[in-house]
Each structure stands twice: as structure tokens, then as C-alpha cells.
Image 1: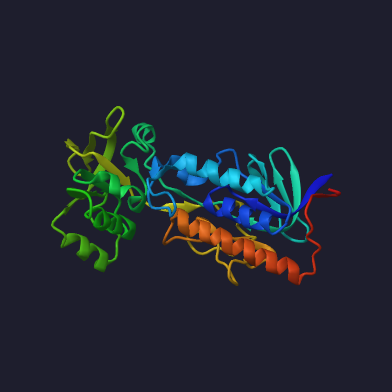
Image 2: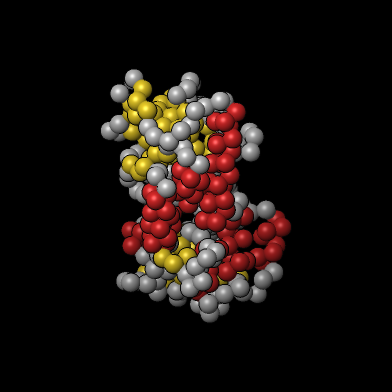
Length: 319
């Protein structure tokens, strides 16, 4: 027997939890499949200062705990399970995890996107201690400091330009001899006196014990190794939407992001998407939360249009 819900939400970031709050308050039976790594990217963020309502800031993990508790308060169920398979070919939709099978009349996909990292041990160890993948989230904490942005695309140029508002100096480090960014973005960064470029340079290690103190790099042409005296490292080599589970089922763009067809509904009626899984531009907690709200409202209206007796509670359906 597979438990059947009005809505299953896949993902437990700001979009997923906000959707759960709205859907549960609409008297829908809600299950959030959180994944084993609950809370999304904010679990890797030290302090959040740009989310409305927290005037003195809040730690990322604490914020996610509050969102989860709020969703539970209204009756949303939580399961820290990873989804391994979905069947969206007919309703009720079937979702399998590594331990259970669930069914739902509608689904919200809010699996987010993951920052691409260099893969260094020091990068992982110092994440949140001077290493970041979000300049707009963490730039404020680097006032008057020297920082590095790693990458050569538009995101790296945008991050470097943004960081000049706070940092003393920004060095863009890129492994190739030319940048991939658009000319207008390159020119904007090149004209900024607070930005310098270090091309054909590969990162070997991020230095520091409890905080970033430097960056060891190697010249790709002559092999010369040198150290940059910096206090912050921003990795800007792209993001990867967590959509591999939905390839061939949901419409994705070239980068793998879900493309909604009508508001937040995907190409499959009854399947909605919210948050960073659809967003390659903003990638902010507050915009993800807004998307979660929109998806839940769209879903509620859609279920009503189907004439669903949503009620409140969980029914059982045969496998």
C-alpha cells in the first residue's frame, strides 16, 4: 500500500518549505520528501542578512529549521528520504524513494541547483569560513578585504563587480588564456580599478585553518607556483540544476533547468516547479520562497479545477 497525498513536494529548501506552508494551510495533505541532505544550499551558508524579517541576520541552518517547523505546525509531513524514481505518466503520480513508495494528486518539484565546486579538500573545509559560491549572499562580510573570484564567465564578472562594493580588491582567477564572459561584462570588469585578472592560472589550494588566509595558484604555462594574500574566495564556475531525475519527463532547457509552461506548472498538468530548479538568474532564498508560494497557490487552484475533494488527511492507494 502506498500512501497517497494531495501534494508531494520534492526538495527541502526555501521553495519547498514555503510551498509546504501554503499547501498545508490550504487544508491539503502534504508530504515533503526532504532528501537526506535537508535544507538546501542555505545549510552551507553561515549567516543570512538579506532575508526580510531578520533584522540582525540569522544563521542559514537555523533559518531552515524555522521554515521546517513552520511547515510542520500546519500539518505538513516530512520524510528525509532521497527520491530515486518518479512516474508522472498518470494520476495519482508515483514517487519512489530508496525505502518507500508514495502517490500524490499533484507534485511540486523544488530540488534546487547545486553550485559547482573545484573539488579541493581545503575548499570543502573552509566553506562558510571565507569560501563561498554566492557573492550577493556573502559579499557584505568582506568589507575592506582582498578576495578572489574563480571563473571566467558572466557570473564571475558579475560577482567580481558586485564584490567591489565591499572588498578592498578583487582578483579574477581563470584557468584559460581568455574569458568566456560576454564582451560587455568583460569590459565592465576591466574598467573597474578594484578588479585585476590572473589568467592561465589554476588553483592548487585554499590556505587557512579556521578562515581563508590565502590562495596557492600555479601558472598553467610555466608551472610557476605563487601565493595570493586574500581573505575570501568566491567560486563562480556555474551551477548545476538538480534535475537528472526528470530528464525525458519534464521539459528542460539546455542547461538542465525546468521550463514552466504556465505560471509554475510544467509540461505535465499537475506537476509544478519552484525555486532554483527553474532559476538560473537570481538564486536567492527570498525569490525561491516566493516561487514556492506561487507553486502552492497554482497547485491549489488546479486541484479545485479538477474537482478534487482535497479534504485533509491521507488516503491509501494500492501499489
